[in-house]
Amino acid sequence: MKKPVTRTFGILTSGGDCPGLNAAIRGVAKAAHFTYNMTVIGISEGYRGLIEGNARLLKPEDFSGILTQGGTILGTSREKPFKLDKNAPKDSSLGRQKPEAIIENYHRLNLDCLVVLGGNGTHKTANLLKQEGLNIIGLPKTIDNDIWGTDVTFGFHSAVDIATEAIDRLHSTAHSHNRVMVIELMGHKAGWLALYAGIAGGGDVILIPEIPYSIDAICRHLLKRARSGKQFSIVVVAEGAVSQEEIQNSKPKKQKNPYFSKGHEVAEAIAEASGMETRLTVLGYLQRGGTPSPYDRLLATLFGTTAADLMAEGNFGKMVALEGSRIITRPLEEVAGKLKRVPLDHPLIRTARNIGTCLGDE
Ligand code: F6P
Image (cartoon, rainbow, N blue to C red; front, side):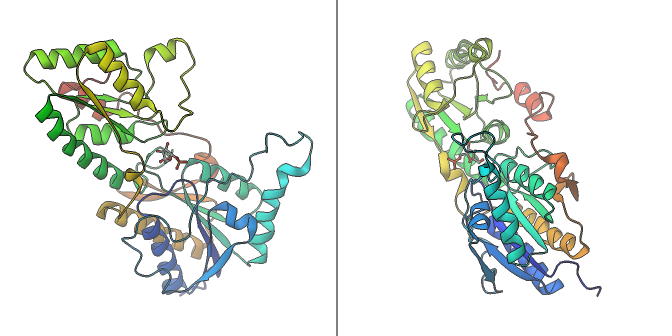
């Protein structure tokens, strides 16, 4: 076998955790170590660990037995090393301190490459580090499925499974008590999770950020269902959903308060406008926890082993992605700063409407 270009690499997980991170770490580390004889350095808590030099040698026993574990054995953070401190003077060198610490530690640890597992913010930083001259490879993870350039991110399908099961379970109480059950799902500014789980769980109303909703339209649908004998309904709300009113006022209300989110607003408005008994469930972090689904284990392992191949070839500066059933790579600069939202002509939107699901707009 040809000598691999990469001998030592660092690996970190950054941004919100999700199912499949450990499966991906295992995939990269096993392939890199056993197939290419590389040395694996685990960096703690995302980019923060690289700023602080918080890293350790990972031995085979560290990356074995973790396939089914939720979370990340490396820890994570939302550290954005290139983000300027709001209070720092504009012309100061303060903005360079963290990137410089990262570059210094990358060389001090003798890394030939850095593998980052993360979402949009992580890949934006990865591209900036590429511009600083680091060899870097990205693996797309997030339950939101909103990373441009890949059809699917790992973590997404596990979250869809969890959310669908939650909707299935809500049907019992909805039906027994003749209630409107509102369930808020995550997804950030994209509606993938709400759309997939909403349709899979048979939601009667599905609100996603890409289609602004009107409470009147939702209530018309719920009351029509009630008149036709269906006294209960399930309303699936993406956390980033926006109302038509907010769009008209051109300032979507920022849900700054994590204890009063979109679901509360929608449930309260439905109860007031329709007079129907309404209850709310905010599924929250349950969607990010626990063991990855078989699909995510496979995807994370595929992405991980591909990262090892790329490192061996010296093919750096890429994000590994899924296109159809093919594993491909995309240059980081092509991916950075873009968001993949649900296109309005997505087949699932048409499907939802065709089976009589209200998407909040009509
Ligand atoms: O990006 C994943 C995600 O879970 C989003 O769906 C959600 O908006 C956000 O992270 C929550 O972030 P935090 O962990 O910082 O509360």
